[in-house]
Image (cartoon, rainbow, N blue to C red):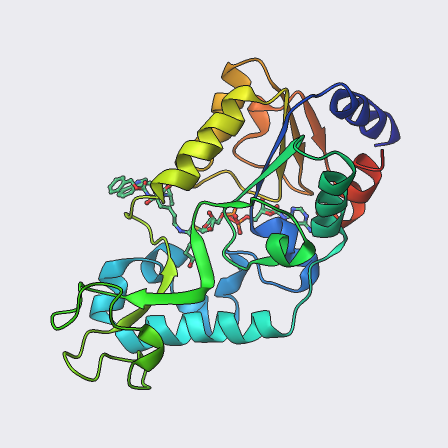
Length: 248
Ligand code: BV8
């Protein structure tokens, strides 16, 4: 690992632009279950894709709402870990050199101090209306004033509140995806941290970086679907590896 770390650090030292693509694994050492693990306990019965969809929410609003409420509650107790902090501190030492693109909805990169985080899949901390509100222009009726419930609903038209995350089958936020594609196509190194690389179009950013000649470095204790793209694979955890990789 030492030799790989040294080679990876050398790659980064020569990189003018670094793009980071992070997934649930970077938050694992903060105590946030990774997306698949999130199925332990109460949720062992459902595949994530059966919960994180609009259809699942319409069919089983309480079950899906409760799943997100439980994930939100667990977030209240967690902190960014050494991996998130190493990225934020690197940005402070090297302004404008590193762009964080994350699939995570936990807000931990932002809380660690990373600026300009491209959150491809939205935020677990925010809500929005499920449908254009019948009695109000979208956005004119504040979800904070919704009637409490599982899910909360508009007191006037019954429109349910939903978490402001991107569900499977939903388009990603245009601006964030465009900026992420720009970062992937101009980077000299893409650092892929803590993702199984199974969800698109996010995982496609690693292919894009490779296609433009960037060095691809993976940090993950286990194999991932992006491994064949990697020039270097550091088989370790984010909180262990990133502080040693970015300490320049
Ligand atoms: C889209 C927010 C256009 C919600 C998430 C059929 C119909 C429709 C779409 C599709 C289809 N077939 C394929 C698709 C595309 C689909 C997709 O990719 N599906 C997959 C399942 C095949 N994508 C979409 O639907 C996207 N939208 O394509 O729109 C469209 C529209 C209509 C029709 C066609 C196309 C939207 C995808 C966004 C879904 N929302 N999150 C929520 O959080 O509830 S995805 C969610 O799952 C996460 O955000 C993340 O992206 C993903 C989980 O992946 P990972 O982050 O990698 O986490 P995972 O647990 O899997 O792995 C953890 C990794 O960490 C592991 O490798 C592990 O080894 C590692 N690890 C563990 N510990 C550590 C560690 N690493 C480092 N350190 C450690 N300590």
